[in-house]
Amino acid sequence: MARIPYTKPYATAAQRIAHLRARGLIVSRPNVAARKIDMVGYERLRIYFLSRRQTHLPNRPFNPGTTYRDILRLYECDMLLRDACFAAAGQFEILLRNAISEVLSSAHGSHPYTNIAAFRGARAHTEAQQSFRDIYRKTADARAIHYRQTYSSPPLPPIWTMKEFLTFGSSVYIFKRLSGSHRTSVANQFGVQSDQVFTRWLECLVDLRNICAHHDRLFNRHFPKQPVHLRSANVPTAPPNKLKAILECLDHLLTQRGSPINITGKVGAIIQRYPEMQPAEAGY
Image 1 (spheres, helix red, strand yellow):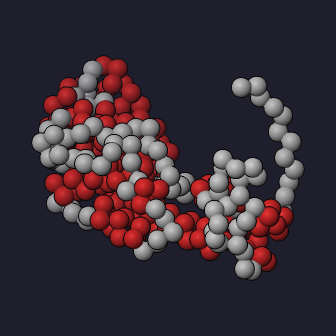
Image 2 (image 1 turned 135 degrees about the vertical axis):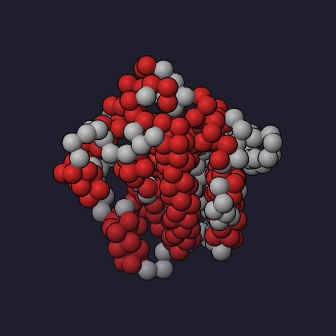
């Protein structure tokens, strides 16, 4: 398809509301609605507006009876879904960092960084070492400052301190570079026998966590990275490109590690409180 220049002019919030009303959206208090757009941003609400428009018709009118409150309720539900998923992913992140630290320290002591046997090979060892060094150099955590001011060597703090400086993404990066036996040991702590399956689940959870952390939408979200089915536990049962499938995997991991929270059920309960949201639109 041939590309065209972008020519859409700037529009104020009041002009946006006028445009939406002209397309059939019911807005009982236009001035209040415009202030909400000013606070939230039209582009953040646009996906919710589009979901209630008849895009196959000229001018793409709204479905009859659609109100501005309906759209705000969709946005509010999505926000609660993000908060719940972010908290659950954060709980798993802590457990993952602890599991990596436990496996490495029990096998290689306080400073496994220099032991190539802890990693997949020379390249993975070098990449992991560089990642640890970069993370330690950039952190302003008081524990890092204490180590720098107190100890002359080794240059990095013990792994049980270092793990506290890792992000979810860097934890997964380090995990992928561990030796096969160490990856399997970590995965087994979460009730997953295959480190390949566990790695795929981790990649899905990092994406979910980042979506939530950056206030992106879960509404009508298709997840490119999809969890592999764990046959031994029949997880997930939902279609693999849906939010529910990722949450089922997360529930399995948390439960097996002794921290059950039933995030799948919690998210389902939030959706039920908002009849404006169709379950399929939230990946359920």
